Image (cartoon, rainbow, N blue to C red):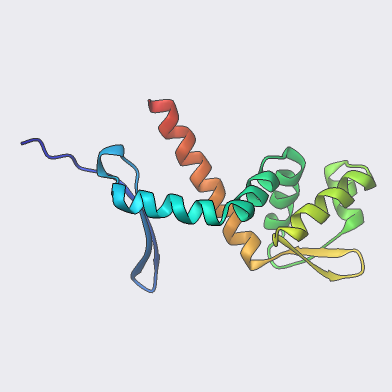
Length: 138
C-alpha cells in the first residue's frame, strides 16, 4: 500500500491551528470540501467583492502603497502623485477598497489600510500564488 506525504498550509495562532488546508489533491477531505463549498455558496457575494477588488492592477498598486507605509495614513493627493493617477481613478478605487473593508477613512482626504484589509490582502495574495503554482504543476 503506497503512502502519500502531503503538504498542508496552516494558520496558527497562539500555537493553535485555526485553519488548515492540504496542498495536495490526494489529501483533501472530500466531506469537508462539500461543507466548504456550501459555505462558499452562502458567502458568494462577499467573495465576489473581495475577488473584484483584487482583480484590478490599480487597486493592487494602491494596497501595496498602503501596506508599505505601515500604520500611517495616506492623503488622496499622495496616491495621485505617487501612483501617477488621475483624481477620478483614485476616487473610484478608494471607494471600492473602502466598501470592501480594505481601507478606512481617517480624516478629510486621508485613508489607511484596515486590519481586515491587511490580513485579507496578504492571505488572498498567498492563496492566489499557491493556486497558480499548483495549476502550473498540473
